[in-house]
Length: 190
Image 1 (cartoon, rainbow, N blue to C red):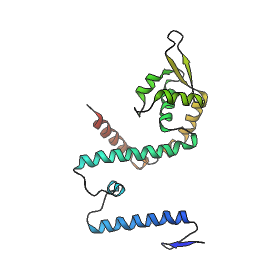
Image 2 (image 1 turned 135 degrees about the vertical axis):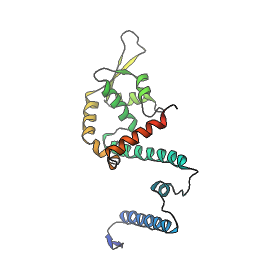
Image 3 (image 1 turned 135 degrees about the horizontal axis):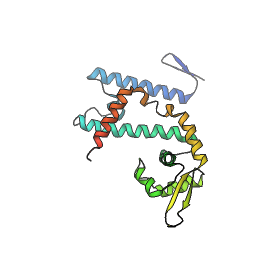
Image 4 (image 1 turned 90 degrees about the vertical axis):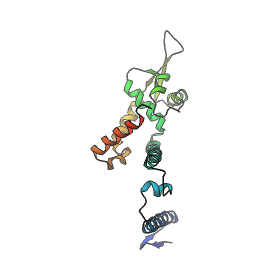
């Protein structure tokens, strides 16, 4: 059985539902544009027409885009059986390689400060991505070192990194530099 919409034949229900959803979003956006000023993609995505001011809109846009990028990164890392936080830990450890660092130092460098670094390192060790070594002098200190398996995985991800950052490649190099400057400025003195 097949369905026809927008002059296109569709052979399964999931694809049909996807196309119909796109069609309704397209029609809804056209209706909104005809009713007044066109909505930006943020306004359309969260279905909010007005913001208190441009600062509020920028704040919401940064949060929305950050979550959107986090989801895209998680999807990209799924085939490697890594979470974004684990990927972050492996990259931190690769930067220290061949030396190791403590879990406390890893925690300081994590992008997501809410992550439980100790549990994450335990999981990474269990899966063979890292190894832990107790300090000879102070047995309470544990040094974490990326394993060969972890290094090989990151090397493989590096070859595909353009795919992971494809969304940002829509920006020119100059726009990316400007975005970095603006994001750094937001965090300054706070």
